[in-house]
Length: 345
Image 1 (tube, helix red, strand yellow):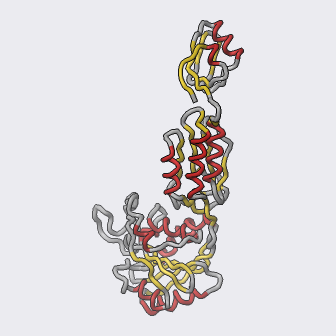
Image 2 (cartoon, rainbow, N blue to C red):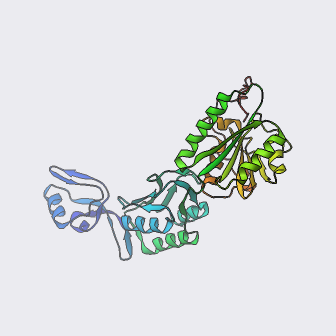
């Protein structure tokens, strides 16, 4: 593509790089100049115009954006009609947004003329939510350049997809200690129901037992064995301090596995991720009693979409893992007196 100032008569067929107003004559930026336009401009005293002139093999910005967007879009991703060199991509259904980061980087590394921007990986999304945008910077790019960008995208294809939620039935076990009010547990269940609603999931079981290893071991085994339960979440009355503490010990005692305890996300440091009877088990941190975003949300939605969450996955969450403070939690970063009804970080 050639770009620059040309005599109006030589600019016919070119794309106006800037809006031009001369008396009653108005040429909008991006307009393809016709012979009639040139005559009107010349009559209005305009002698030259800055235009982009496509050359053989060039691809118009809209076509290029749409072609590349169609390559990066995978399952659950809808490509919208392009405009001004931009093609936006949207979620077709609710779920978790999965991004191949290396693929995005590869596309953007092809040329400064081609850009792909996305939402953060693993973000929970709703149907119709915008996920990404492909923007072609100039008015046209060479066909060869577009093919290189498409090849980079295909190497990691599909780069973008939305995994629908698969787990819909959650069993909850809350442990009790003196000083923990039943109203706190009731509120916790309501907050959790709100978290599950966008995923189409529900609290299907509400068990409350003493904060005791034997009692919790029996309860978690029984809930995990139920065929109508897809996931188990344990809200401990006291924060987990060690893998030998009540909640992790009860899970392993029931025959389960604790894959990871702790995460580099705050609030959310004291999250436990495990498995029992082929189902995910979460030991919720105290901040999960609050409706504000915390590390529990990040892991919960991945599991609801059927994604595995490994120890390595959790260890990579540190960058961006410092979230907004939850003032009501027992030990805020700035200090404060513990509240008996909460469970810690």
